[in-house]
Length: 332
Image 1 (tube, rainbow, N blue to C red):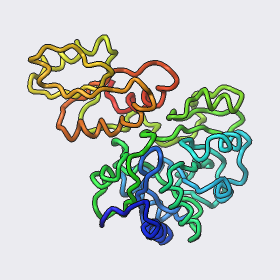
Image 2 (cartoon, rainbow, N blue to C red; image 1 turned 120 degrees about the vertical axis):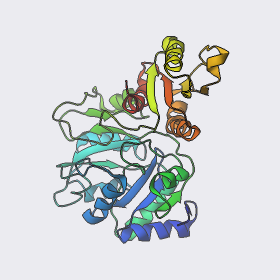
Image 3 (spheres, one colour; image 1 turned 30 degrees about the horizontal axis):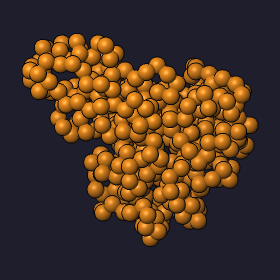
């Protein structure tokens, strides 16, 4: 099946009709490409889990066209959620809210809560509006890749992961590059369950209170497993000052091993070792690093490296999302 153009209204209508009929559609958001099915059809949602090889007890995020559509999935938006939606929607922030009984059970993995997000991408928004006109209140959509692997940020990434039988809308490179932040608003206090590109300090400023860390009562959310976002090559993290020694040790252990290096400065390496290294410069800016992170990891895989060594990002709030994805992708 050809990849459809997201800027073509006819292709948007084709994708919307497919969703309304219960089929799967991959589409771009500002974060990553999603694998979507109508959220009110548990059979359609089950096809997402099957296509990804995703455990059925791992909930999905439901994408909606606007705040009004939230009423289809929650009996009432908590005040915390309403405040955040007013400030950050459309945008890369998912809100965990109470689920309306009898709706979205498969998408929520049977939980009493559900994750809602209004994406900020013209193709996603056009698709959601067109689908809503056909009676599709929301679209459940995890990242369009095999479960646990690197999320796709381009249409060709989706095809490489899930094959050419899937209907894919092409909206170009994803702007943010990593998944949305997730805030649990279903309890009296807000919890940051997954960092993203929205700075936690901005979220706290809107709420007027600190975000708490996940606890035993926190709902399961996408991307919360310790091992996730992993390329085929083993990912290792090292502080900038230890990167050279780590590379020399890895090369000494296996001189034939090709190494990928993603760091803000090229580590000083002897010419004999440098020949085995594929270096990519990590941006100094967290926003730019997030934008390209998954694409860089995929490119290292395409280049056939055996290990990917990544400089540990700075321990600063704006790098929270990048640090989280790298920690889960790595073996450290």
